[in-house]
Image 1 (cartoon, one colour):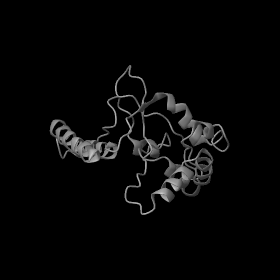
Image 2 (cartoon, helix red, strand yellow):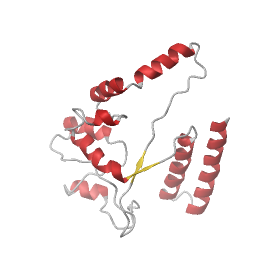
Image 3 (cartoon, helix red, strand yellow):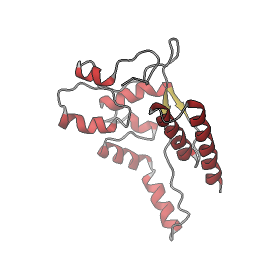
Image 4 (cartoon, one colour):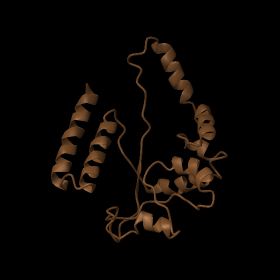
Length: 181
């Protein structure tokens, strides 16, 4: 096993876990927040920016956009739009996020409990200034999927970087064309 997550020799995540130094998970941290109290109540955990790729780089994280529903095929468009407006209201966002321990979409909800004291939410707020926002368009999912697949192929030694990126670019452009239809 070779750790390819950084060029700065960041410790192997499995070794770090076994030594009690840290547990590293690169996925949705909500799963940690939900599972840790039941499965590992004594495990101390937190959320932080990923390690920088090169000495001197600033830390950064990606800000994922919310996906929007477009009710083209709805039989009752008026009722559909009413439901979309209702679920996207500031109050409903707060209620759902508090109930399901998710992160709010509206700034004013971050200033309300439980988000002011929840360790996960507090850590995310500290990371937000380092976020890189990506354009929100209907082809974004296909673009991210194509590049994610390319990265995995390279990590698994199934493809060289150049051909993997060329394939990803082709698939991303197709996603953009398909979204524009």
